[in-house]
Amino acid sequence: MDKPQILRWLEETRPAALERLYKLADTIRCQRVGNEVHLRGLIEISNTCCRSCAYCGISALRGGLKRYRMTRLEILAAAFKAKAFGYGTVVLQAGEDKGIRAEWLAGIIRAIKEKTRLAITLSLGERTLRELKIWKKAGADRYLLRFETSDRNLFRRIHPPAPGKKTTDRIKLLRFLRGLGYETGSGVMIGIPGQTFESLANDILLFRKLDLDMIGVGPFIPHPETPLGATTKSTIPGQVPNTEEMAYKVIALARIACPEANIPSTTALATLNRAFGREKGLRRGANVVMPNLTPLKYRRLYELYPAKACLFETAEECRACLKHRILGMGRKAGKGAGERKRRAPAIFL
Image 1 (cartoon, helix red, strand yellow):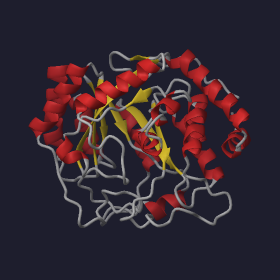
Image 2 (cartoon, one colour):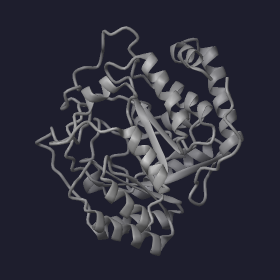
Image 3 (tube, helix red, strand yellow):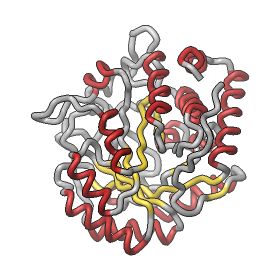
Image 4 (cartoon, helix red, strand yellow):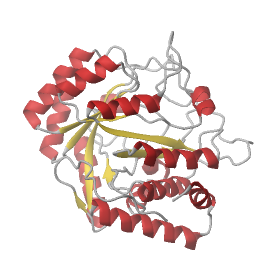
């Protein structure tokens, strides 16, 4: 699958043609990763962030947002719940919170490993090489760091560097994570103002070049209290729309480009389409969902974008809902860690 082919699919609008794309992606998904849908228990451990990203609802720019950082006991309680629910993985996610000290989190990682044997995924933003080494040694298995866009100029516009720092190279950091032994995950936003079809095609090619173990993509949903909150449209030629359909196209193309990767059907899709968003993602190449284990008193404060789905469901309700949806599709909930299984080279269009 080369760049001109990807571009043609990204710009395709005919329903019958798109159904062929989705069927191919679903067939590859079935052949390469099977019919299991892996459940990753999400724990949003902190909404504190030192960065001023132009699109994010928990960035340092939001002075009026109540900040929190879960305690060790709260995090462990959520992890124990994941184990009781039969999940194979917990995802510890936060803003780029410098108050999360390396040794403190390493102790939590060791405790989760010792008491539950769960796989542990970290999604904590750009951290120092020392921190990443400490957490890997403590037992962390995976790290998620979305590069958001391969367009360097656009990245600089939406991702100002941390105070006193230079613009970082997330691609280089992803390669370092792989070198440390982490399963590496990344991804992009779809429809961020200034994103072109060409740059999005380059993103998909970069997924393949990086040989990602996990790929997370989702539509740009504007937050009114961010610099990009009122910028829902762009006049640049070839601007990518931030639509539900476009998100499905990127999921399908990511599956075809990276047949063995774990690809979630995201909460953002469920936000755009509360009735069937997750199911549609799972029918177009995705094989992972992330039920929320964050305590309800914190969940509404982790507001990356407005009207986020599942803000008021308990962990028990979220588990029951997702399992019902998975079974209703004729699929089954996965067991174990659901790590990537490397097989033959990719299938191309």
